[in-house]
Length: 163
Image 1 (tube, rainbow, N blue to C red):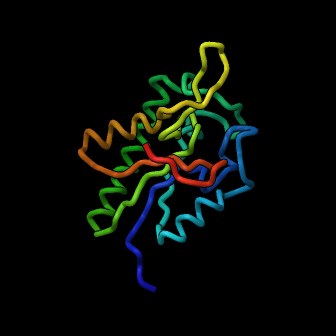
Image 2: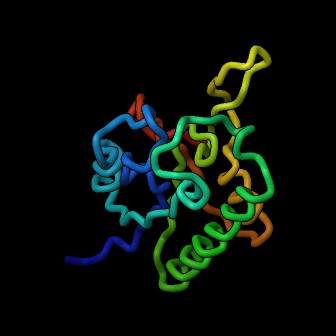
């Protein structure tokens, strides 16, 4: 079979909900609707390493963007992003179309369009804005003048959200 030569880069937990914080997973393993979307489009999926698993245990409580907004977390994110951008360049140099990068709607680190923040009342709310990882990803892509569409996958609505 002929290759489609189309790839997307996907946040780790779209392919493995077991990596999400306690009580946050929306499916038992992969997000089937996301994988089916990729199959229909003919996209190969390149997983992005989970930044949270670099500095927190697998069994952790949900948190907000403010919890992760510090130098150590941003450093971990930048290391993963450096590797991810090298792969994007490699695919493009080989003639592949990099059709997008997918974050996870609402994630405080991997939300590309929406993220969880603390409200003035001290509650976690889902707002328009990037999580820490995609904040750093956007800056790194812009610095290198690399243009790739960035989306969130909304697990509840089972569809892509763009900026």
